[in-house]
Length: 228
Length: 228
Image (tube, each protein chain N blue to C red):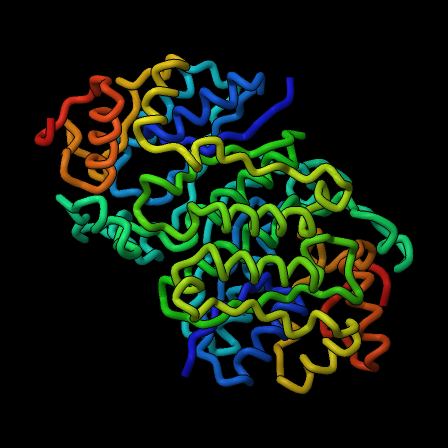
């Protein structure tokens, strides 16, 4: 079996990506960052998902960038946008943007992949139902892949780490259907930007998730404060 | 004054790069990683250099990658190559290669630059007297720059963080001369891959440094175990 490093936040998308990588026959090394998110809930979810889905290893890496970065996801007290329509979400880059987050995550994932002899890195970038992040586009992933080809030992030796983004072209509803098909433990996933006991149902991430379940005709097993 | 993030290891090259960035009129935010090097000596040197050279801020970021990575610079007990000739050093990628190190460092530096409104990131990559690392070449830096243009908010808005590598084309002797011209506190810098009380004088980094000083006709103020 070939090893793959899977970036896992514990949300719907990355949990589904893990399931897809496993279905392709890879031996899974899940990688989660503790980068100063305002809540630990997503790290707990990632642990539960990795275990439930049979990851061979789960690395939780502390990267105390939070206070240095300008994002409402890491700044205590900053407001996370709520109640936005999909067209609002696509109209610009929101305050939840963490500068270069996927660039950092992919760099570390590629580094670990190279060290452990994994041939690929899986990321749950999505360019359809997304929040306008520049580091989630096919254009970005192509540029990152090109950079890995020239900037790593593996790349120089003609066996570049491949960046795989299997849900990049899927709608949220399609991702929900894939998750169901692949038996992703949806009750263990966490998508809400906030760390409450129940998902808020109002942030961009909850709204996109709820809409995806609705359109897929699947019931979301999570409890929400509002929005069901 | 425009802000610049300078990757500072505390060695000769990065200290000289800091001096060059300062001479260009930038307000300096120095950035040093504690990534599990086998010794803290280079972090102590970085602190001393940043302070002596008037950096506005010095961020020391913990990134506990060390045990995950396959490199003799981070693995306890692994042998660092010694006594190699320059042609040996250029003939392949040595065990001191830390997979994707500069990719990770540049990603984090770009992220911080974007957050604090800095327009550039300075790195002491060198493609002349170097040890065969793929992430030190102009080809790699160009690919990284292209990736930042498409993958960041700043890039999307037409004000991409610029990656500056001002010593990339210099020989070690030229770097030594620049360091002297710009009053870099050479006695505070540390280049040795080992963390002894004195520099070993035998590892690739010591050998390149000693050769550079010799060719520049400048006396290296550091004490060495052998090699002077």
